[in-house]
Length: 292
Image (tube, rainbow, N blue to C red; front, top):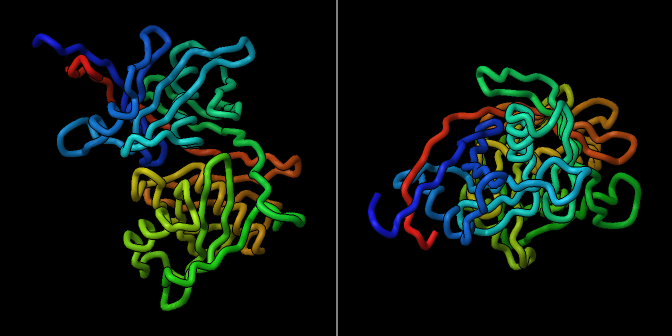
């Protein structure tokens, strides 16, 4: 090992292709500069490559099994991440830190997760996560959870962009279109993320309504750009679609994303349940400058 360098052990995991570098901070102190580390390690050409970095932290109370912090590939800290939470829950179960159910703290929420299926030999699982209730955006019944907004200076399919703003502990702008394959996805996603209407930026979901309570979605994730999937984004699309009567609340909404399908249930108790796969890809150790 060269002078001034230290080793870092990591685990690469993903949920429907939304991939993160996970650090086990149960037995080792977390890095001093996780934001800078996320930027360095997420580069897909010069490093491991990922949508971001996740710190798996020990619980700070006896009623929880872990805490999680997630940093996007640009170094910004995320406030919610359903796909990473499923991966963390799988790791807790496979590592013996938790049983078939667990409680994970992330920012101001405690999320409960349940292992529905598990294959420890392949390090895969199907996990159902209680994401909690959406945040009320306006007055009214189901429509209270979506704030309608028109951006006159952003054109989608030749018209001003209409969207439904939903919060699952993090912001989402959901735009329903006739065909997600026929939009200027990257330009529109980037412009909406950084639009002055969203001073803290926003995640952006373009959704195409299909038959049978299904939808096809492309995700532009705040701080990461296009991702293969987004758990909280899938929840936001389901909520927006139910509030606009595109989907029935009486049955799960199937959200088809580029990395796979997620199942969303908006239960009568107000909580939103996200179910989908998680998988470990590989483990490794790398050399890092001591400043990181």
